[in-house]
Amino acid sequence: MKVLVTGAAGFIGFHLSQKLLGRGDQVIGLDNLNDYYDVTLKHARLQQLDADVNFRFVHMDLADRDAMADLFVQEKFDRVVNLAAQAGVRYSLINPYAYIDSNIQGFMNILEGCRHNGVEHLVYASSSSVYGANTAMPFSVHDNVDHPVSLYAASKKSNELMAHTYSHLYGLPTTGLRFFTVYGPWGRPDMALFLFTKAILADQPIDVFNFGKMRRDFTYIDDIVEGVVRTLDRVATANPVWAGDHPDPGTSAAPYRLYNIGNNNPVELMDLIHALESELGKEARKNMLPIQPGDVPATYADVDALIADVGFKPSTSIEEGIARFVHWYRDYYAV
Image (cartoon, rainbow, N blue to C red; front, side, top):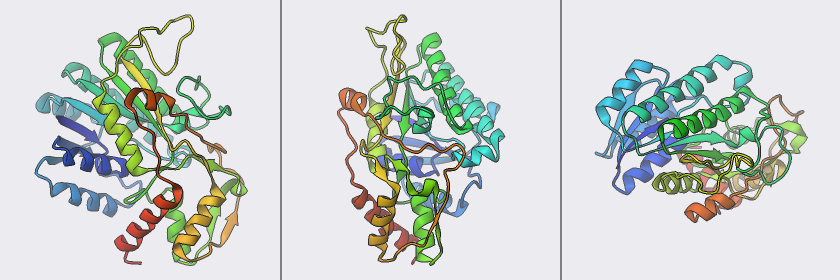
């Protein structure tokens, strides 16, 4: 297939592009290479992808309406995976407009491109953040998610609503994937595991929010990518028993689906830190702090829908995932 992967220089986009190229797909990788985090890391990822003749990089911003429209017309993609977005819960409190430009306007341009150019299936990144103030665990795609606690979460919920509209009006098959705390080699430097590793190796203190009383469904990158590929290959369909008098948020009478991709095994933050200390052979100096605005104390993915529809459940243990990340980190940064 000819697949557009947006955010191809990003953490998940890079790994997904590698997976698609490995099975023989043609990948057009789009990224605006913004400086939200170290651009050198993004270029290093692209350098890996550029070695494959079936990969081509396009330096473009999702919010550039005319350029995006031209790209869709010229390339005639079979399928699209939209991973480009302004990420980060805490940064959305500092620079909210970045989330509107990328996550709302940019996604609108993706939807229009798919609608007008015969794209067979749009798969897009949502987030576990959409569960917001929900406390019933594990989080299910069949739950109502109308109480976001950050603008980032609200923008991802908006993507789900916008996608449903296009599935309903134009019959565009769309699948939204709610990712749960992704980690692994080539990861994002703003994420906790990356920050902790860097600080511990440099004998600097780490910031431990909510005094360590956080639980996250840490999900290894290979599991995330496997889930993306499996859902990409299964074009979204309508739920034949969907009913408006008891509307199921995770499906629709339109070709629209939502899935959680999470490890289905939440880990205490302090347990993550202890596992990292063990792998690094160094104890962390911990700066215990209160919970930050926009954060949620716990995440836990119900993956029953993912198992039922595509036969996959993430399974990489936190110990194995941390070991692989630390091995990559030491090699990449020569530490």
